[in-house]
Image 1 (cartoon, rainbow over the protein chains, first blue to last red):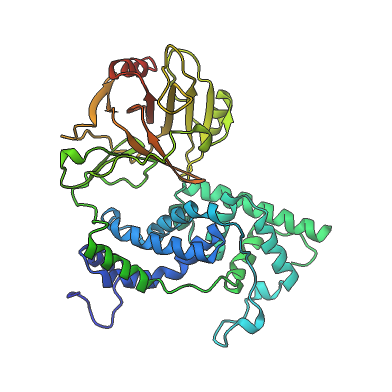
Image 2 (cartoon, chains in turn blue, orange):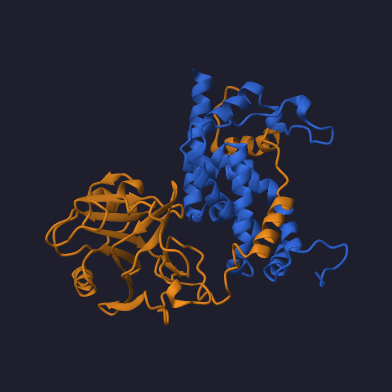
Length: 191
Length: 255
């Protein structure tokens, strides 16, 4: 804790270095920085708030002990999300009731939230629900790639790292997943 | 989205725009509880930090074999090493729990024909020259490269593995460019061996086997003898009741 520069947030790699040397407060900053995406990453797999919380917590603990394997030059976020994903996969079988993706109601948005983008504004509520419903019909490998990439806004490289699959596999699953979503949406309109 | 046909790019844009609109469950505060656990575990020593003497790290760990029964060696610290797609961690501690199941092929994937297996996995491992396997499974890996599992029923050639309905279990994973293959020094229950010149290890003691699959991590108790080696980018793990010399003979027959 001696080599921090006041006023400047430390880079992930620096926090990881401090944590590796025993500075748990530095590690706490990393936890705080990535707890939301970690929890959501786990939730997209388990679809259980309780299991996702446990998975994220356990993953952060395991990641601390694995910091020796976090390599210089590597990005911390996909590295820790990989651990989170695996922890979540180990827990999803105990989930009996899966929580569903839903859209926030207008009154749930804070005044500081951005207004819906033109793309979503152009989607009616039914169409947004149809999109979410179509997501649920994808196979799990495809759904995870699509949701990590677009709903969590991870890059393709981060998605590959987090799910421990090859970048080419991310591309192929994205392509297949988007095609299936498009077909489902068009089918629902035609029907 | 109107009446016109959509493109994949439009679906992607709609998903991206939808992200901020989703009602994810509220994110719990994790910092406090994580740090409390770390402090507690540090104070009580319930989970010591992995030692720096870990020999080689490996980004893609497909299989992790934790070798038990080493407490008597009084090793001061844990260590791990890799051979092809297999990481072996040597650590003092308890022997495998009796509650763990033996290697159960059906827990790892669906049975397929040998031809389907090769087509699905995208590589064709060598097989022993003896009788053909009775069952073949594709092991879906979270890393994207499936593994293959071949299982033989007990026979005069392959005596039964303790506690299982199998006589021989062969697992093959296609390695990757980052594979590091080295031998380990002075770990008396993990023996260096050689299969036609390829570095191998022979593990004749009970241990725990964990395989990461797309269905999660599968953990097994291994009671048989295990030979691990890598050749032509494919890592083989052979589990058998045969002794070392006979197991090596089986492995060499795969050349």
